[in-house]
Image (cartoon, rainbow, N blue to C red; front, side, top):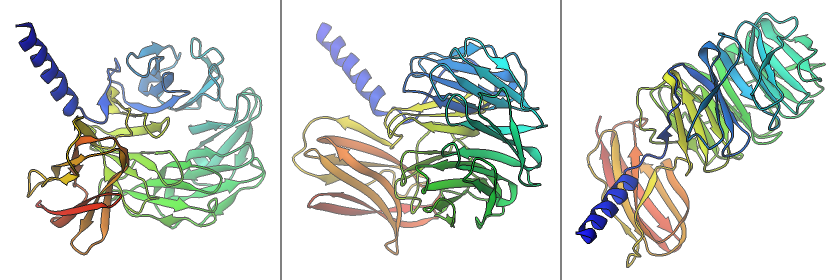
Length: 408
């Protein structure tokens, strides 16, 4: 009897693990719309949202508590340049500061600005905010005093600070302005976009990306600090991505409507859609702490977490197979999700890619090290057109390709 019970328990654990999504929903304790998150490490982070909502976790999101903001304004963004010192920006010139990790938040406001939309800080003292009417303000004493720069007539919604002197400010109509002298002079860059810029991220002073809201998802890339911006392959066909997160110069994540989470590992040449377990939520902000751990926040108190980079792959058996094997996808034909199963006989680098009928690579599903075992990958092809596709498994001297059919 005990043996049967043990077997049933083991099977329950196995199947629960096997079907586990790569982005797990967390219990936020709120139904307020959430806009942004910031983590100082894998355990400690903050989330902000509507009606002055501030959430805090010290255990990687297992539990979320509430911190008192003292305001009912919508909070757009949060930054912690150190463990105790944090800043929050919100609607109607709301600017909050803490020096004790959020136990107390003090309202300071930003002098000479009527509206504030985004902030970024270099350290505990030096930071920038942007807002309506093309205004950017800078502080060098932690928000006590501000110097305002009226750089444009265009409303600005995104500020990205690379260092104390190098800053980007972005807004509507594809507007990007850059300063390299702490705001004394601003130069408008040619972006090739006419849409509202919703997010910008940089891996270093040269390599960066921004995304826009429009008819479809659009991402632009620079490799020379913004001197030139070029559109990369569109991640998908929703109305646009609301947030970007960057791991390195070639690996970028995006979050948007319909529960969409995108990832590229080749600088935007191809994008994968990662299973979020939700096709209805409006996702807003995304944060990647490293290549594996990340958080996404959105409307109605939605918080998602990944601990494997959201790569869409699950190990369903640790038994060592006799050799490599790539199974036929199921179902086939499919619309829009199908399962790909494969076996790996030894630890090594494995690559799983998808090609269209012309041989053009349309998605890199996985490219990394796997241990021996059998794996499943749930491939979401919602961003692809109907047709014949091929999926290919490669590892060292092994390669196999199979055909699948997408019917919409």
